[in-house]
Length: 79
Image (tube, rainbow, N blue to C red; front, side, top):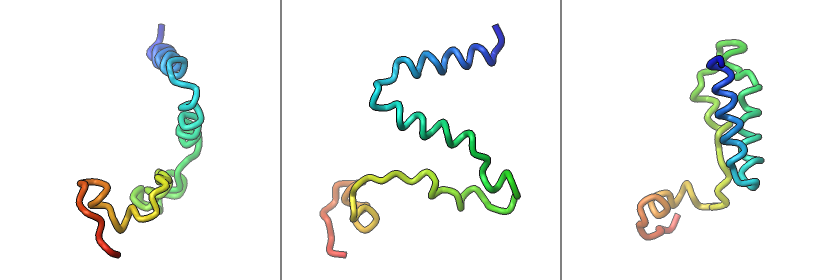
């Protein structure tokens, strides 16, 4: 059995073990591998400028302003 086959087999086993509600997130993650990033196409965009592609909507509207509260449990301050 080749290494490629072993890797695919391990991936399939992990997918089978995942809870159904996690499958859409996995699908989204895997689709990103099918897209060639701009930096690989043209070489002109540094990877740091693509970080927004990994943003997650937390549903917390004041996360940036109150990050100390959410990270360290400090009291919220007036923005």
